[in-house]
Length: 155
Image (tube, rainbow, N blue to C red; front, side, top):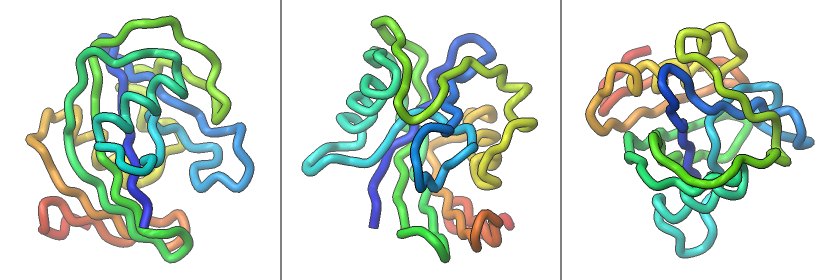
């Protein structure tokens, strides 16, 4: 079981995205995702997202919002509980990320990028300003075979 965080830093009509191209044996290889990572022992979701955002970007979050819990089930990877955040305030100067290339991407351009199919669902929920949600995503390989939103099957 993996516990992780993911954050989309929001600046106007864009999100700071990470193109995962630098790590070997990366489940997210070549995908565009937000910033975040795995919990360290004893961390809360908030502590994890603050640490991971700083490690990957050099930015310290000053205004962020806990948006939902995403449960990933896969036939290839361990199950994962991902705590999803957005942020609209930070301090610091960005630095290069050792996991990929950071870029500000317009929200209207996100759907044209190589994303996980389930990410398209929660990005839509973020854009709709959905209340706190629980999203379960079930994958076979890279193919999304089932999605449940707040306990109701939507795919």
